[in-house]
Length: 261
Image (tube, rainbow, N blue to C red; front, side):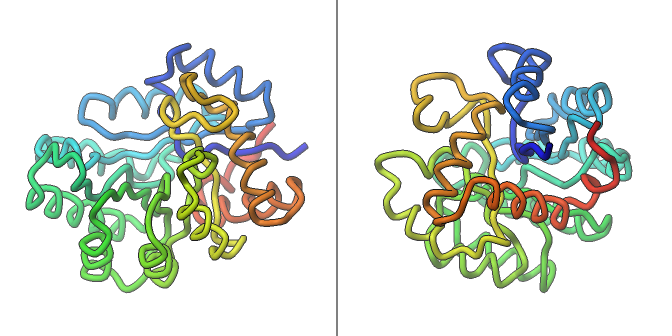
């Protein structure tokens, strides 16, 4: 029976540990997960987790905008050297974050652009983080390539961002934020996104969905976001599951190269 894929989680950050978190996910209808690289120190960790648990676990490799100031030639070489591996499905988590500005904006832009270039050179999709930086995110995407494959992960943006991203070829990934009481404007945007351009994720251990608010998030909780999303879109849960599965395989081709047993 077809299960769910959590396309954005941080197995190495889970409170219960990666193995327990993965087992709980598998027991709750999640076939596989994509664990995300964000920092120079976790590139080896997420890659090794994907190697160890493949094909239940895949990974992305990239440097988060918070840590753009840590991007070096050595880090870049490590990322590039592993992009051809079957476990590495995308370049990410990359992007811009002007809310925290943990790295200077000019450095964020430079590192984001460079990682986009790497994704294009290696014909890989991208997983993007963008917060309070919508116009610059779109501008940099346009400057590097006319079209893209990948997702805006944990989408919390405006209609402007959704429309521009979709036009560029990117999909929208929905996290537990869509279930929050304060997310009325986000829900209106998600209603406008075509079903064949949507994905679901947890971003665990962050942003646990209703009814799990107050707990540390985990990949097993993706079903709660998916159920909410199905109701929001007015479709049966199984219909959403089938469509999201097709979206995942289209967006991350390496997922389709290995059968789930």
